[in-house]
Length: 226
Ligand SMILES: Cc1cc2nc3c(=O)[nH]c(=O)nc-3n(C[C@H](O)[C@H](O)[C@H](O)COP(=O)(O)OP(=O)(O)OC[C@H]3O[C@@H](n4cnc5c(N)ncnc54)[C@H](O)[C@@H]3O)c2cc1C
Image (cartoon, rainbow, N blue to C red; front, side, top):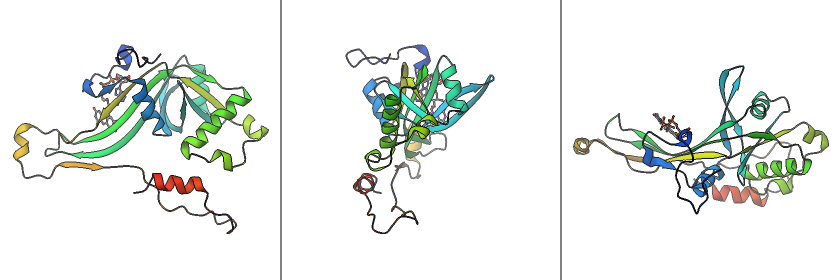
């Protein structure tokens, strides 16, 4: 289990202990959840016949679980359910850190690595709730405006839940850290912040002209202005 807020925020085991630049390690469940909730694409590690694989996929966190979905024949999802544990990583790149020396160039980031057992969500209500959360995680408010999955679509969708048994975050949010003697060099240094911004939506060519842009799309644009 993740350490509860009343306990000190220390790693729950050796395998989730950040070793290199350990001061960047974060074990506060609220901070870890915040980093997970700031994204919707993760990278999932799994093994196929003993060979390592990593694949990107969409996710949503609900409570102490992360939900993934896909085709019932999806090899990644099937192998996660068949394995004792899953390992998932989420990364946000917040800035390019340009130092005075090539060696000290870096990246400002927030990332999470989590471990836990995966199970198939086969209860229809829970499956729908997971798909609802997944859709609204990508763009809040979407689920209530679209046709919800019918029986065949639900049957054709595998949903799995990975319990966040253990997790760590690593965060860098700072200016460049140069060698003391390099601060005298006449080289520009600083951070180029990066963020996800939305451009103007492109209407589907088959959309009747009398259907206006919905409020949730306008709100999304406002929240993702350059
Ligand atoms: C955008 C980005 C770019 C990076 N670029 C580099 C790079 O170029 N070179 C480099 O050496 N490192 C880079 N890192 C850091 C890298 O992810 C590892 O933290 C680093 O390789 C050293 O890890 P370690 O030896 O302490 O961890 P390990 O001993 O390999 O891992 C132990 C445990 O620490 C935790 N952990 C380690 N790293 C992270 C992390 N990033 N987020 C959350 N938990 C973590 C996990 O629970 C892991 O199981 C980058 C990270 C990010 C997010």
